[in-house]
Structure formats: structure tokens, C-alpha cells
Length: 369
Image (cartoon, rainbow, N blue to C red):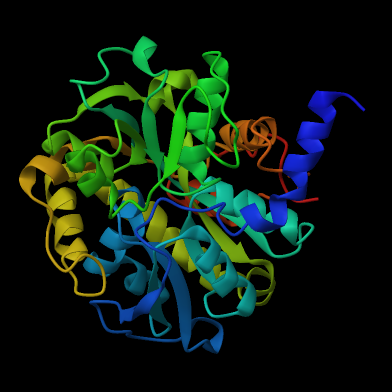
């Protein structure tokens, strides 16, 4: 057995440990209590269902559900079926909630979506829509790192071992010729897994030299004197890559397709409203972030402005980039090669888009089996 083959097998053996970390770009790991929509349920219940439970994160890459909840756009589509939300801070916890039936639909990053689908052998979830692209940057201490050629010997933070940004950084370093052990983070560059809520303090204190992080953490670091040396958009074709998509329990999709369709109508209409009203959307998002269940206070203008602008809102799940992100995780030794065929079901999304006069969206050959 070759040394390379042995190393990959050894890395694969760590997957049961790593899958709990394949997650999101949130703050911590606990789900916060359910919050009701700001608009009360009114009218007939869809399929007689009392409520639909959705999961999301309290950050700017989840602008669609945060704004849609704040404006009551989801509740308007659901009529008498009440929308209830749970705020999660990491992908694994949200996947566990979906699998246990604690939530029905979730906004979540690509890595936990891939991992949840692969672990269940394609039975747990479907990706039914896109939500956001981009919003990730490599922010450096400009006194320590002048250019992308200065990374050797430096310490770079990512949110979690094996999370979406961790995979992206490991892949980027490998492409640049740096050798880093994916599991320990040790090598030519030290990859230090640090909770996003701790990263600004670590950056300010000098215990890390840079961070590959999502918004609003990236903008928080810039506000602390950091420099955004690389926007991850520059590494992707047309500057687009999935950072947030929408998943649903397969059981819930089968039993309540009309409710799922109503949620997707709310999502599509929210995204259209955001694009048409960017300033009000930014302020609405910041108002929602100030909820006690999320951050408890709004972000300062110097953070919310760039953080909001750096995230592209989209209905397209950018399926081709999901496959690429999975390939990057495999190459990093953090994931055994998954079969993603069937991970998407865009039937209801395309129905909604057609009714809105919008173009249909492709699943890159990864649609329902």
C-alpha cells in the first residue's frame, strides 16, 4: 500500500469524529429557543398543519430567513400554518434537529448538507433551494502578512475542523503547495480552529495572524485593523459558490409538499424584496440580529454595511459548486467520496419560479434519483 493511499485511509478512519465538525459558520454549537414570526398566523392552515419549524443561523449569510421572518413574508405565504424558527450556531446541531424531527426545513451551509446526506445514505434530506453565495474572506494582520506569498509559518483561523471555510482554506493551501495535516492543522501553515465569536479577540491579541471566515466575522476583523487579502469569490467561476442553501426532511417533503412550496414562495419573494430594497433589507437584517435570541444588539455600521454587501442573495443553490466543495473535502482527507446523486429536488422551487416569471434552475445532474 502506498504512503499516500495509507494516509487517505487513515484520514477516512477519522471521519466519524470529523463529521460532527463538518458544519457551519455560526457562533458556538447550541440551538437557541424557538422564536415566532412577527406576523401572526391568519387564514386557513395549509393541509391542516398547525406549524412548520425552520432552522437557521444568526448571521448575514442567512439573510433570507432572518429578513423573511422579520418582515412576515414567510407567514404571509403560510396563512394559518404558523412558522416557528430555531436559531442554530453550527451545522451538526441543525442536522441532528432535522433528523430527530425537531425542525422540518433548514437554512444551512454546504458541508453539513453533504455530510448529512452522505451519512444517511441519501435518506435524510433534500436540498430544495439556494439562499446565499459568497461572503467569505481571508482577513490578515497587515503587519504580519503583506501578500498571499507570506503565509508560510503563519497561523490562520477557521471556524471549525472540517467546516465549509476550513475545507476551503485547506484546499487553497494545498493548491499553493503548502503541506498541512488536515486533522491537526499543523504544517507549513498552522490552521487553528477557533469559534467565530472568539476569533476577533484572538486576532486583536495576536494569537492568530489571519482568518478564513464568513460574514460578519470577516468585517469585524477588518474593523479591528485587519485587511481582506482574498475574497473567496475570486477562486470560483463567475465569483459564485454556495454558502447557504435550504434543506428539508425527506419525510416532511413527502407528507407536506404544499407547506414546503409555501416556504419556498416566501424565500423567493424575500430574496426579490432584498434585491429591490437593499438599504431597508440591511437595516431589517440588523434589527433581527439584535434579537435577544441571536446577538442581542445590532452590528455597528462599519461592520453591517460591508458584511451585507459581501453576501450575494440567490435562489440558485449553485449545484455544481456543491460537488466541487465535496471534492475539496475529499482531497483534504476530511471526507470519504460521497455519492451526491439525488441530493437535490428543485421541483417545487422551479414551480414557484415559473409562477413568478423567473427562469428555471438546474441541479447539475444531482437531482432526485
